[in-house]
Amino acid sequence: MEIVDQITTVFQKNFGQPPPHMARAPGRVNLLGEHVDYNDGFVLPAAIERATYIAFSPATSQHTTLVAADFNERAIFSPRTIPTKTQTDSTPLPEWAHYPAGVMWALLEEDLFVPAINAVYASNVPRGSGLSSSASVEMAFIIAWQTLGGWALPLMQRALLGQKAENQYVGVNSGIMDQFASACGIENKLLLLDCRSLDWQTIPWPEHVAIVIADTAVRRKLTSGEYNKRRAACEEAVRLLKQDLPNIRALRDVNVEDFNHLSKKLPDIVSKRARHVVEEIERSKQAPALLEAEDIQNFGRLMNECHISLRDLYEVSCPELDTMVNIAQAIEGCYGARLTGAGFGGCTVNLVEYQHVNTFARALATRYESETGYHPEIYISRPSDGAALLW
Ligand code: GLA
Image (cartoon, rainbow, N blue to C red; front, side):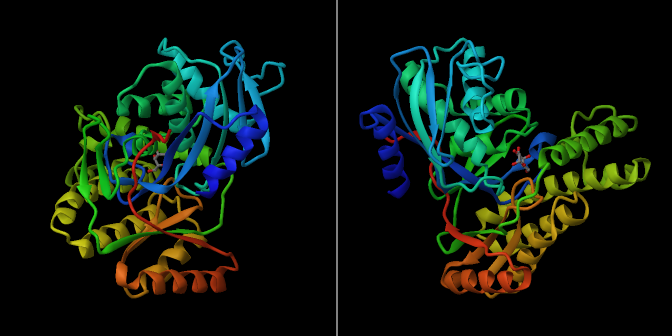
């Protein structure tokens, strides 16, 4: 595989030997349950074929040396420099190194043995595209450190530590979905996670349906600020709804009927945000039975409804995502299309009957490019395995 060969070469060049170990951790695509993980809701993601790969070996010094092959940059740090986000020469850690350094920090907080490593990593999960490239980096490093540290964490704990690194070290207030999917993915299975209990199960993916991921090629800046604002609005909704529903802990505990009665008591924006969450949780509750019955038509309808809700109520779409979705929904063989991930640019996810998948992909790319001027990337994907050591 190209990327494995590439980092093997870079590793050899930097560290003078072929890599004794290689790990892979996938990105993810989410089919339903968007912006509900931090509201204790249900999500339906799958790990994808695109992944972060890391070649690594134990280091002979106390210093961890990382080479980010995608940026052609190197960072050197140790447990001593972790709290100040600096390198061993006291210069600031480059931004990309905050993710691996954050993982080291989270593992040290657990009192785990985190040996110094030499590593090279690269990813074919496009950054900022809503496919969780950062979670895949976090899970790849957890595999590297656990391999050389001589301990093994349960899958969900790996996910939780990756999330902790991202929330508390990198400073992005994300939920658990991305790390969960990267850690727990299973080939040809959709994952269903209850974000409150963290119980999860798998749902077989129907053979005749392709997951098509379409990258708008648009990236928005400052998305973490907007993301955090959405979270704050949800918390505000819970605080206000508690006056009438004192037992609720999260929007997960509010049903659509109660919400309809009480929503006028909420400020306009808070009400829109909360309505998306309450209705999206309802949609994601309907999904398992539909998938069980292989009713992809109705599952696709829920995805279409989800997009409208993300666009009009949660307001995390953008003109290019809307264009991509509108074009897709009108092409033969498409069951459903919507933006995936946090939004504000990035990718859409489309369910397409296999027999139409190639014509679908071509038509989508051509029409999108002619309407927007952006050149999209289209990936035909299937659910893949989660993070693991390759050798
Ligand atoms: C980002 C976050 C996830 C989740 C999604 C929206 O990917 O990292 O935790 O909140 O946005 O569903």
